[in-house]
Length: 236
Image (cartoon, rainbow, N blue to C red):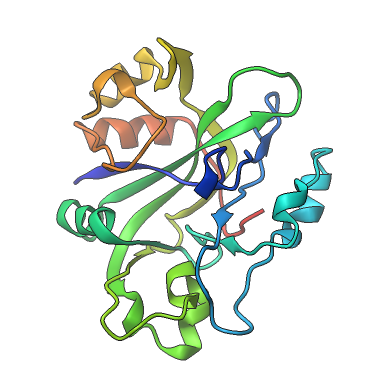
């Protein structure tokens, strides 16, 4: 079994929306805020940021003005248990994972209770069920992932991963895993030890371009089970 740790969600980079989703540091409840959609999508399949207004309001937070008229690149899509990627990352997904392997999604969240460093935390887990090219998704199922919602040409190689039902989904409460150390966010040393190590130096968390691979995925999965996360089939 293999497992990959993959960063998702809005962040302060230009392509990430210039914002971080909120988390309640006491309850670990959070709002999953995706990055902005940068391409054209099929009419009627848009996912506006304003659909998050009610969830954000419960945290006493409002969307920043620059996101209010934009659409979300809702990926992963926890409602439909899909995750898509392109280019080198798509190649790594296909090369490193097969049916039954694990993708662990984490995000940088902003604590609404107190200012300070971001809360880097696991927000969802997929057990891989199958891979499919976005171009092969039927029109009736295009709404199930951000990459199939896009208007794409016949040679497109965007890859979509489907998560296995019942054992995949968004966490009801996030699992904090990071700390700010040596001028960067990193996985806490106690967790690196519990997981059997990581393939990135010093547990570096701030990027996932290389889709860091767990060196001992079974140890990680055992740790995850001990946390008793509650999976929910929803995205807010």
